[in-house]
Amino acid sequence: MTLRESPFSNGCAEGLHAVGWALILPCFWFLEKILAVCNSTSLERAQRAEQECYLNPLRVFFGAILFFTLFLLTAPLALLGFLLWAPLQAARRPFSYHQEAAVPQEEQPVGSSKVTFGFVTGNLCLLPDGLARFNNLGHTQRRATAIGKLIAHGVSRPRIRIFVDSPSSCGTLSPSSSLLPQPTPSYGATGQQDQSPPEDRADQAGRAPRTQGDVAIDLQGEDPEPSAPPASAANFNQNSNQQSRRGHRHPPRELGALGSGDDVPWEVSALFPANTDMVCLEEVFDKRAAQKLTAALGPLFGHVLYDVGVYACQVPGCCAGFKFFNSGLFLASRYPVLEAQYHCFPNSKGEDALAAKGLLAVKVLIGQNQEQNVVGYFSCTHLHAPEGEGAIRCIQLDMVTKWIAEFQAQTKQSNETVVFDVLCGDFNFDNCSPDDVLEQKHGLFEDYRDPCRAGPGKEKQWVIGTLLNQPTLYDDEVKTPDNLQETLEREELRKCYIAQPIPLAGCPLVYPEPGQPWVGRRIDYILYRESTLHKQCHTEVEEFTFVTQLAGLTDHIPVGLRLTVTLDSDGADP
Image (cartoon, rainbow, N blue to C red; front, side):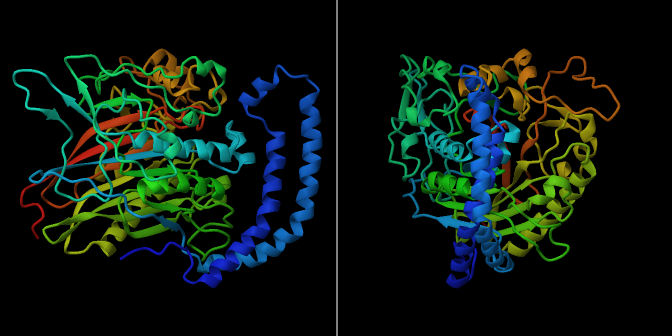
């Protein structure tokens, strides 16, 4: 069964909805500009320090008057469009689906019983420009374009094969493959940190990736010198100081080198993990930004769910209050989406009640094996944000657990083999803050495994926080991928730029405990479980990645997880 692309069941409703939004958009844009012209980011303030002091007040004064006048002039049209747009929300499916022609798949070696799956999640803060500036992030549309190119630039790197020249050499060392067919080529998962992408790769984010030859590294000789990254993939927020660093990449490092002794290989990478299969993004609230991401990632992944969530007023008990924004969830998948379901949290409060935050659960088709469909379940969410309201988040976690169980019960077929079950997103609580103790002990973590968690309130030694301090987003130490990578790897620097844990009200913060490393707030999660998989599927974590490629473009650090699934020889039998 294939999902229809349009959120409406007929073209007439879709056309009326487009007309209504077209009437609303100019007024909405001018309101956004009023907020933007009155609120500058710290980067813009630093750039204006060299200008004449009277120029900015004049710009703010006359800009605000101009945009307010245009806002008033377009308000009647917006009201007419709203009267047309709002009633249609009752007939709208809560997501749009985009699919493109499948990229020719790579041949898989016969006889293998392993397959790897790569997942990435990150919060992009792609709010309308005027609102994003309250988080010290501006230029939403430019950021969306840059982020789309950088994600495609990172995940579409070629496979790297390592040749060992020794008497016992058996040839090429390469990642495990599987009999399970995949809808897109596999680009490999080893050596992605040190290998620069092919020339002009980022510029091709809007087109299907070319067929690439393998990159060979001779361990007896010298490594090939990496080429400079394409200028089009550069962070538009980086100033001329970065130009002197162009082409620089850290030397190869072993996974887990900074956290040896743990059972999870990990790394801090200046590039997104190669061969990522599914990407979940949060806070993609702006529709135009979502379309830019779809244009960049659609040709690479093939299947995209965007504009996820509901608008306006909904059935009582479904969502609380009037929804001005969707859920902000965005999903790109290399595998066809068979089923998708969205639920809105009914208990949102305050500013969070303006957005339709909730859960998106999907079932994807991996392929067929011995007359059975091989599928995977993937869920993403964004929980309640305000601090000190852990009880609301706990109720939402209860809902997430319930909704996922119901979705899988409704969609699981007898002739299917489930090979992964992953939950990810921005949970808005960490595993070190005393204020988040309720969420840390939630039963969800007994059902799903968190690779970074040692127990309630205790992280593993190598873990790094994922929430950056907003006022320092453009400091030299964190404004480029390489600089942010170095900062995260050094605890004394990390303390200055990662958000600190939240203490209980009225209690001083004592952190970290003696003998423990300084981690900071890790609020972005990728969890997995085995209890719902086929009884002969076994899952291991191949690597966990903290990604710095979006430095200066968001206030979160994306994270990646690669799982290796071993399917016993008779694992596909009924």
